[in-house]
Amino acid sequence: MNIGSKDCVLSFEVFPPRKNLPIESIYNTIDRLIDLKPESISVTYGAAGNDTSKRTFELAGQIKKHGVESVAHLISIGLSEDELTRKLKILKEKNVNKILALRGDIPKFSYEKGDFDHASDLIRSIKEKGDFYVMAAAYPEGHIDSHNLVEDIKNLRKKVDAGCDSLVTQLFFDNEDFYRFRDMCDLAGIDVPIQAGIMPVINKKQIEKMISLNGIKLPKKFLKIMKRYEDDKIAMRDCGIAYAVDQIVDLISSGVEGIHLYTMNNPYIAEKIHESIKNLIKL
Ligand code: FAD
Image 1 (cartoon, rainbow, N blue to C red):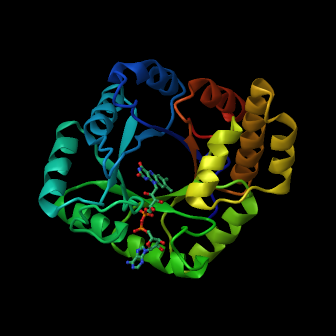
Image 2 (image 1 turned 90 degrees about the vertical axis):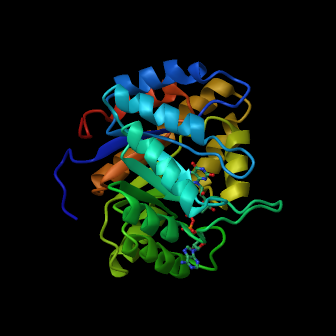
């Protein structure tokens, strides 16, 4: 896709505060992110025993009230058709028209399956029930449950066929994986916009968790940084920011349509990255 020199959009992702914290504890973070004028801010959704739907929808509604587009994540595990109808009504009342529709991770304990097997089933139902812009998740290295990337891309195509309007990727650290994935999407006839998910890694524990949950690989360049600075909090933070900026500049130069920044509710990091790339993106 040939896009103009400043057509790349920037979006942020936040998660609702833990249940033992007041919802207000995230307001300052959201205010600082809004000041950066992102294209949108998405709010994650905890499912299966950690239902955050109330807070997810509340925050998405508040972001929208501040004049910034918001995206509410929605997980299908345990969800019935009736419950989906109810949730969509709440989102409409809050003026939230964008949803990132996901299946969610399969819990390790026994759980209610719900009416949807996969994200594609959820997407189809949302599209039938109302006028929503629906996004879906994509995995440049393949989803951890898939046997291989080809199988995963065939399944990704099912989400697009079900009506999803755009895709947001899982975080990745090697842009070559993203470019290979994008080419494969082209071959598979996946023609919706794809936003690249970038997570600035600021501590070792955080990345170890991501790797064990999602099977993401770390390039040698990154491992070298981590080995040298893992015990120096400030140096590791600055390296994480610099690495993310380097990735983003390369992605924008290669015509990526959007950058989705996993902020980890850390506005300082979002501000630093924004400062470095603000003249390269659409504001
Ligand atoms: P699906 O699209 O259903 O895919 C899951 C697996 O099933 C894949 O291996 C796929 O290849 C396969 N598959 C898909 N469709 C079919 C089909 N029709 N037939 C057979 N196999 C199929 N998790 C949360 O709990 N909360 C969040 O807020 C959240 N936000 C996320 C945001 C982004 C941008 C991303 C990338 C992930 C997010 N996740 C979140 C994680 C996500 O819930 C997990 O990765 C989950 O395991 C898969 O969700 P999915 O929507 O991709 O599922």
